[in-house]
Image (cartoon, rainbow, N blue to C red; front, side, top):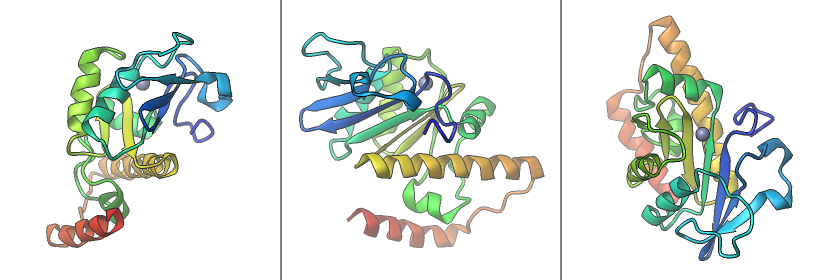
Length: 195
Ligand SMILES: [Zn+2]
């Protein structure tokens, strides 16, 4: 993620749910230089059982999403430049432009700006995850979930690629979405992959 420029500086955070615990990256660490000490354990409410360390300030966004989606086990929050640009321009990723994005992600809504690290942000983002696997956060970045860490990362890459294509079509003032009649076929492929 760091090498691809998805988490510049000390931004972004990753969590993985393992049974009844959540492993999450520490607050203010550079994801390009992660070591074991930068990975902390929190309980499902975001508390530190052994009171040790300083987990990501966005941990409540993670815990609130896990509460709403019992089948997913990984969440990544990042600031990739093209997705973040869309979020600043007030654009979502709901128009079906690329088949791969429809199959792997479906519609990606844009959630109104909230101050980072607040419970308001955590809960408005988490509510969107009831019906979506990724959410653009206005003037901020992107959060995506998945069953495992690799699949979630691949989704993040697909989002950044889709964002780039979307931005280019905006620059060209030309956009030809996938025909509506063909969307059902893509959704069928998606359901098959998930089953
Ligand atoms: Zn952020």
